[in-house]
Length: 375
Image (cartoon, rainbow, N blue to C red; front, side, top):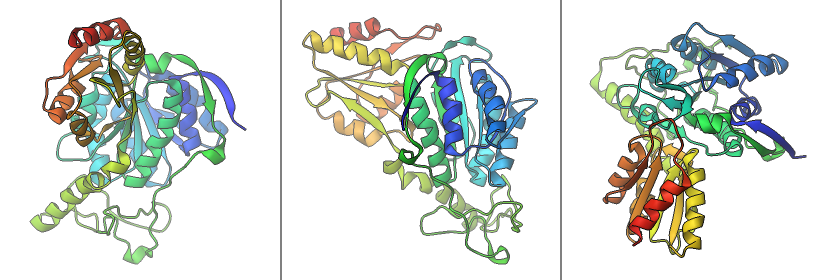
C-alpha cells in the first residue's frame, strides 16, 4: 500500500537510498547535506547496513569505492567544497568502473562560499571536476517527490552502467518539507549490477563485451583481481600498450554515449504551440513552472523543458526544438552553466536569468524576461 509522508529532500534521499539497496554510507558532515548523514547514521543499522563518519571527503569517496568493490551498494553525501575534494576519487571510480552514488547538495561557492544558502553552481564541476576523458551521469530533482524517485534511479543507473552517478540537489530541495507519496516496493524498479559467470581462474574484470559493460566480481567471493586508476588491460593490470589504452578509453566513454537515449530524461509542458521555451532544472524549475502558468494566463505562448538528467545533456532534442522555438530562457542559480549548453545545442543566444546571491530565482524575474522577449 502506498504511503503518504511529510519529509525534507535530504530525508527523502536517505530513505530512498535504503529502498534502492544501499547498505554502506561514508561521509563527512557539511551543510546543507548533513541531514542525509544524520538520518542514515540511525537508519542503516536498523536494516543491517553500515554508517561511518570519515575524517574527510577524500576518505569518504575511498571508503564507498572499497565497499562497492566488495559488493555493497554505497553512497556519500556532501556539498560544494567537499565535492571538490572528492574529485580525484570520482575519477578513480570512473576509470575503475566502480558503481557508487555521490550526492551533492549544492551551495554557493567557490571555496566555502555560502554554507546555508542555495546555488546550482556545481553543474560543470559534476561534468568536468575530475580530469581526463570520462563518462558522467548527473541527475537533478526539483521536488522532494522527485528526490525520492531519482535517488533510486541514480543507483539503478550506477549499477547498470558501472559508473559513479552524481545526484545534484540544491539547498532548497534538500531542506524543503513536502508531502510525498511513497510507492509500494512492488512498484519500484531496482537494478543490480551484472555479475560474472566466469570461474575465478578465467575472470577478467575489464573483459571486452558486446555491450561494453563488463560483468563484476566481488572481493571476498573467491575472485582475486587488480583494480587501479592507471590505464589497464582486460586483466586490470597497468599497460603501456597504445592499442589497449585506446580501446579502454573509447569503451568507458562509449558505454554511456551508446546508451545516452536510455539515460537522458526530461519533462516537457505546453511546448506544442510554444514560441518561448524555459529550460530549467532543480529547484529553479518550480519558479519556472509558476512563471509559465502566469505567462499563459496573459496569452503568451511559453512552455517548459525540465531536465531530470543533466549529464548526458539532451543536445539533439533541444536542437530539434530550436527549429520552431523563437527564444530559450534559462533561469538558474549560477552565471549561466546550463545556458551555455543550451546555446551549444540550439545555436542561438539563450536568455539568462541568473542569481548568485544565495537567493532563489523568483517566478517574477522569469516572467519579466518572458514578457520582454515576447513583445
